[in-house]
Image: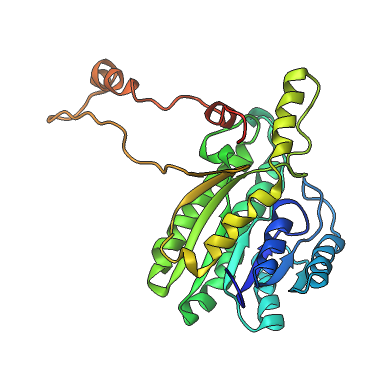
Length: 301
């Protein structure tokens, strides 16, 4: 599917990123495995995870290079793309997968907790995408795959930082798709459901929590990889600006915000008229305060 393409996968030292890197290599891609080796909350560094995935790819006969630069700042993000150019001479695809979590209820969240998560997920995706953009433009081809989340698309408790970054990433992807389609460049998002160390801290103190974790454990990271490989391939040349979700053996095309219902008044509105007429008319179409688990309420297939 991606024979000869050069793809950067960020956060590829474990979990979903690792599975995508392995799948790309198995399908013929040359892979830059980027991972700084932090904890799930972003502390520390370790070159080991990225190198272990590279060794695994090479042992299977594939081609890969390790990179340990951070996505959160422009200069190191540019070095990630330069790594692909130095080792393989070109860049054809980017998978923005790197991420951290610092969950906290909104009224308890610190500025640092908000900034750190947004810098990795949203700024990181911007920096790496921007570093590849001119190369894509000049060669008239390229594909981005960004990992979003139903925490942003739908909602979850205690993740204002993560949710804001992940929904912002959907808008970033759409803007990239619109701005760069004339150069043959595509940009799509995947919201993955999978057990990884990013969600390994979910509490299991009650039978209900234990049952929830048991269901999530069924959704292994390798189930996400095939869609990412496809979106990076030429077979997906007509797929652009879309948001997908993958949950075990299910693939969903997700909706994007569009008008649901409208009211109008020729002479304009007063606040009182809005209270008496507009809101009662619109209320039947209000979006409920769902969380991800409310929308995806059935067991994984």
